[in-house]
Image (tube, rainbow, N blue to C red; front, side):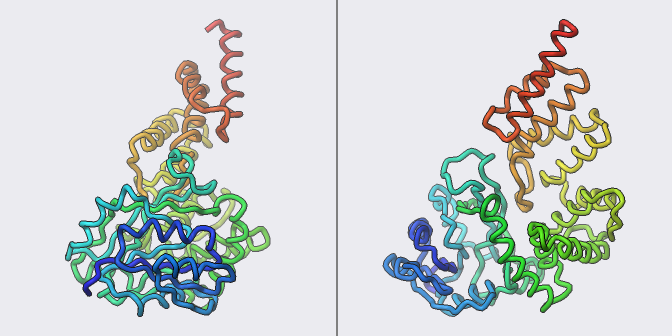
Length: 388
C-alpha cells in the first residue's frame, strides 16, 4: 500500500461537529473515509466538501457492521479509527507520525480525554476522564470488527501479537472527545446501548467483554437494573473460573470486580467482596479506582490509620500521572475526593493543621466544596474549644 495512514469514522447527524473532527486529522492522514449510517442533516455533504470519501450504510443496529463497511475502501497501511465527536490533538501529531514507519508494531493505543461537561480544550485534568484505547491498526492483518455495541477488532489484537511477535504500543497521539456520557446524555445512551448489548449477549452468550458492558449499562437504567445485576453475576461466574490467571483478559474486568467488591455484605455473589477486592489489587495494582476501593474499605471499617497512606498515594497519582490509563475513571478520586477523605481521616486522628490545609485546597466551586467548608468549621470549633 502506497499510502501510510487512513482515517475511518462512522457518523450520523453530526453536521455540528464532523468538520472539526475531519479538520483535526488533515495534517496526519492520506485519506478519510466516513461511513454515514443515515444522517438527516448535512453530515455527508460536509464530509464530502472536506475531501472525505463517504460510504452510505443502512443502519442495522450494529456498530461493528458500520465500521466494517469502511474496510473495503481503505488503501493505506494503517487506519486510525475515529468517531465524529473526537478530534486529534494537533500537538501530538508530530511525535506520533514517525511511529507509522515501524514494521514491528501491530497497533497503537492512543490517549483519549473524555470531556465530561462538553469539549473544553485546555481544561484541567479534573474536567476530563483519560484512558488508553487501541485505535490505530495495521490493515494487512485482516482485522474486522465484532459486537453490536462497544465493537472490538477481531481477531483479538492481544492474541495476534502473541502469535506473530508484533507489538502493541502506547503512542503519544491524543484525542479529545466531546461526550455527554456522564450527565444529561447518560440515560439516553444507556437506553440505546443497553438494547444493543442485550441483543449481543443473547446472540453470542458467554462473551465476557460484552456481558460486562451489558450489565454495567443496564445498571444505569432504573427499570433495567434487576437485569443488570443478573448479567453482572453471570460475568462474575466466568471471572471466578479464570481468577488464577496471572493477567486479566482485558481491562474492563475491573468494572465487574469493583461491582462485586462494593456489593452489600449480605449479597451472595460468585466472587465474595474480599475475593473481588484481592483479585482487583492483583490484576490492577496501579488502577486508581482499585486504590480508591482499598482506601474506602479501610475508611468504612474505621481504620483511618490504614486509609491515610492509601489516600496519600491517590494524591501522588494525581500529581505525577502514575496510574493505569487502561482503566478509565473519574479524576476526582485522585483530586478533591482524595483530599476531602484524607482530610477527614487526619481530622479524626487529631492532625488538625494538615487536615485544614487539605480542606483549604478544595475550591468552593468543587463538588466537594460544601463538605470541605463544613469540615473547616469543625476544625475552627475544635480550636476554640481546646485553644489549639
